[in-house]
Amino acid sequence: MDNRAIARVLGEIADLLEIRGDNAFKIRAYRSAAETIGAWPDPVARLDAKQIRELPGIGKDLAAKIRELVETGGCAFHAELLQQFPATILDVLRLQGVGPRTVALLYSALGVRSLPDLEAAAREGRLRTLKGMGSKKEALILKAIQEREKDLGRHLLADTTRVATEVIDYLKTHSPGVELIPVGSVRRGCETCGDIDILAVGGEAALMDVFTAHPQVERILGRGDTKSSVLLDGGYQVDLRLVPAASRGAGMQYFTGSKAHNVALRERAVQRGYKLNEYGLFRIGDGEEVAGAAEEGIYEALALTWVPPELREDRGEIQAAERAGLPRLIAEDDIRGDLHMHSTATDGRDDIESMAAAAHRAGRSYIAITDHSKALAMANGLDEERALAHAARVRALNGRFPGFSVLAGIECDILEDGRLDLADDCLAQLDLVIASVHSRFNQDEAAMTDRVLRALENPYVDVLGHPTGRLLLKREPARVHLEQVATAAARFGVALEINCQTDRLDLNDACARLAHERGARLVISTDAHSVNALVNMRWGVTVARRAWLAADAVLNTRGVEDLRPLLRRHRQG
DNA sequence: GCCGTTTTCGGCCCGACTGTTTTCAGTCG
Image 1 (tube, rainbow, N blue to C red):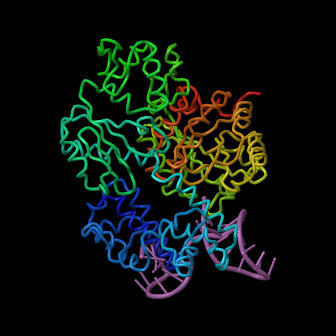
Image 2: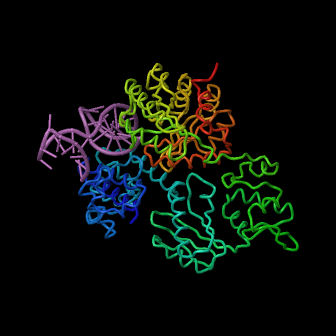
Image 3: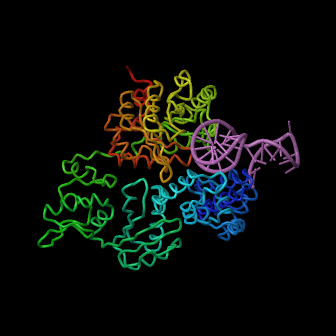
């Protein structure tokens, strides 16, 4: 049983206890243990009970349950809770705006056991008969169900990439010698993916037996000699396709997509007297193969430079490739520093020294510690006095690691009216200020845009953090007029953030590209709340690549001495 | 549930918003 599976069971116990109305702190203990284990870098299954107890927030009882999970694959307490409530009720709990009290009420009063039950009850107007519910709440729940359906089956890029890697590793173990390549939306780096496409080059049809026998297969959707599809635990659909070695490049090109890019490319092939499919590029007439073994050869034969997968969306990349005008895209190696992270001073899990040491080990040459400001009370946000005392401790880390600098910053809340949460004379004494919206996401576009623009006017704001506030598969972006914001940011010299949290990726690719075109500078920041989250830099870089950005469009590709004069607070005039 | 102790119980981040009420419960972050 891997860490993620253990974490899922502990999380479900927490959810079920919450529906049952159990002690809130007990629930928190389960949830915190789930988070700890879900993020733990080494397999907890290898630890004995005593070692498990040394993990933070895990004591005698939880350690015993974890051992039970590892040894038996199940947990009696979890099973007992599932006797009281059906597992499908957890889907209801995960709806936006529906919490444990509502779930308990729906279950006891209306016998709602699943999402379909709830939808039927809402459509029949039965919800409004319950205490504390009215027609608005009923409509809200129906909307939440619809929004959920829209996202059903989609997963975050970080999750699909992990599953794709796991499946590929499994196939390699059982069929060494076959080349396996992730293609489709995973290869293009799309922020969410509906399925996982894997290309097997030069394998035998027997590989499909190995594939469909994967231990986590929940259902086989299709089984053929060159194409099979399965549904894995957790709702991941995986497609495996076989092509002969001679068609390696054509297969990669065809299955990477996107559909729109491929349509445009095939049209171009036809115009030039060729036919393009997953087996190769062929001359119309004599059918002779012109290219197919390598992707580069196909693009070259069509008089194009090779197009990086992240750009294959038919958003102008073919025209640019025709004139050899594609940008040299930023890569993770270009990143020198990380300008957004939290510590135990507010809602981070690791202290400032651990964060600095880990970033140094990861090869960064500088970081900024940017804890929350006081408006975020639930995160123990800093007031002016604490912010400055914290800054002094942060700065004291300079000199501790060779060739490594630590900036003292803050992630300051943008209040409802656009004022900042901390006084100017405090912000002036810091090295870097990120301004972010964390509340009142539902303002209309005029109010939200004015709010952000007003914040940008503050002379001490260097970066606008997660500019739209969206949460992938969960919360729509705030209604902010991004073009106006980008234009103002360019004028004031404020950088816009590409936030690397796997469920944020905010700005997204299209917005980051627009911001760059409007002259705004960008930063790519992890917003790490723990040492483990520092690796998320790669996802932000993927977004930047999909936004057509070269390294020089991103401030934190510069060394710290070159960065400082580019921060808004140090700009002349 | 965990944790830490002035060692075995008592504390464990809480404010804002929404929809429902007419003083509050539930949800979210």
